[in-house]
Length: 96
Picture 1: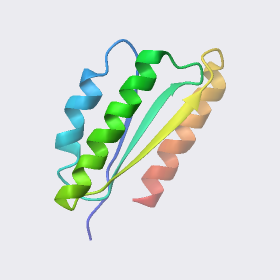
Picture 2: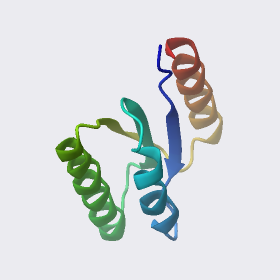
Picture 3: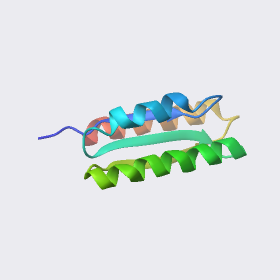
């Protein structure tokens, strides 16, 4: 039985870490990538999400799939966001 891995990433000043991780992360099948970003995303964040989506889609040609999701958070709701993130981690841990 292959275990699915989940990679959580936030988008901030630089997306290079997320983009660099995807090829390594995508080397196994059925992994999940969850990008956490503000509901009030900048143009750069929107552009980066599209780049990540294209990169994730490119893995389909190799027979690998990465489940890519975007989770939006409110910048001013730290406690609510932390609770939501903990729930996501718990869900991912129990579904693997």
